[in-house]
Image 1: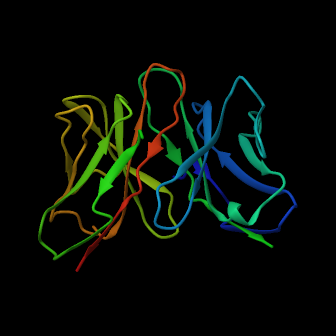
Image 2: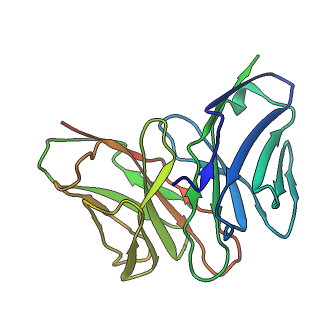
Length: 114
Length: 114
């Protein structure tokens, strides 16, 4: 049973436009969410996170939006650049207690065309 | 430079042989993790350790073993009991007690078993 779902395996965007990557989750215990970027044959790189006490977090060109009632989050990249082409993973975790486990989605391949 | 190192980058083994993947971190992080990535799949947790001399099974621990004798090191052994060992293996670490759950990843080891 997939608790974190990224329903779009791929997304193609023109350079300079907005990229929107989506993620849905089913576990109500999840209250901390992260986005990672991954190039082929490399480890994922942490991009941005958000806790459930917020509905938006920004860091430069990257903004994450959280809709708790819909159990949905999205990553916006504005403006998109060719170097943003990579696989993006959404991850989630309960923040309480001593459980540090992250549950990952299957990823979305973003291609930014020059 | 602080970071996580994994060696080797590529590893080839014959079926029936055990193989140990190295993971070292100098970030002074308490927690360390091993994930496996298969094509088209997200990251699946194999084992994790929150403190030295303690570790827990993740979602797919069968056929794997770990040790955590030092804070800096978390080696993973892929045993001959693992039915599908060929995969991309990722090690990660995180700091506990900060309220932030970001995990930082090494560059990965591509294991091919024939």
